[in-house]
Length: 139
Figure 1 (cartoon, rainbow, N blue to C red):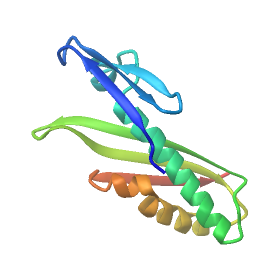
Figure 2: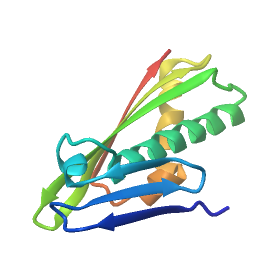
Figure 3: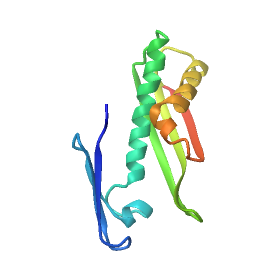
């Protein structure tokens, strides 16, 4: 399986704009303002957050299912922080927050969630991010 996405940028960093799209139809426009301020549009970090939340949720479902305790639902939010550092713009932090509806005690859920945070493919791809926090709640 190979996933495909494209991006196009036109113009300078300050006055230009771009668009991103996936082969399955997700798309959005972005600009410097949508990336580093509260400007209209999306940004790469939002898409990374969506990918991380989706991957974590699915991987956690896999682990729980293999444990013969399949979840009723997992809802994950990812907040991706980008800062301009001396090395340039850097993703410095990702906060994952998940609500898990499964018939297990909270401490057992925490163990499976820690495994998912460490081992889902997107987490592995984002291993260069300095801080990835996880908060899990039982539904």
